Length: 260
Image: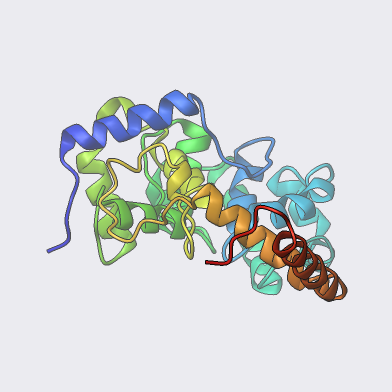
């Protein structure tokens, strides 16, 4: 059975993350619930930076379902073709825009059932929209949250739903509103997938991960840097050797030299 943090340690973990960033939010750029919804749909298997680059020109002309349908799928594709899986995403955005107009009066529904009926919207996307647009205490589990929850022992689980339910149980109510943002940002910038930045981590002493990245010793780091520099300047090697040989010879001929 995977090791798990206690409720007291979980509370301390979130307390530290809140102290460092009291009001975290999504890094996706949006203007209203509709543009947020579109951004989250576009962000599947894509970076927030890449989505923002595409939508900075898209949203000024298509920030409502009506304007998006008027724009058309082909022209939408021109704006988002730098994003992965853009053709399918363009179809979904058109389809969900039509449903919003026909079934919701052009408004984004503020409930999970209505959101998950929209094309391209799954549980994670619905949770993001509910949390960011409507202030619901939902927890969206992406790859970063999944990794941090399992690695730290905060909420171990084999599936995103397992982790989501585990986080809901162990997270104190006062932290639920921003919990997934703290965990996303922590996973994105500190608890990296390949080499986590454990020496810089605010919660390293609470974390149950057994293979923490060690802090590099200053002398070792300096020696490594010098070795890299030397390797990159092969022409200096003979000069260095000559200097060392000359220094040895000078020492041997000095009055105080004693070879024994």
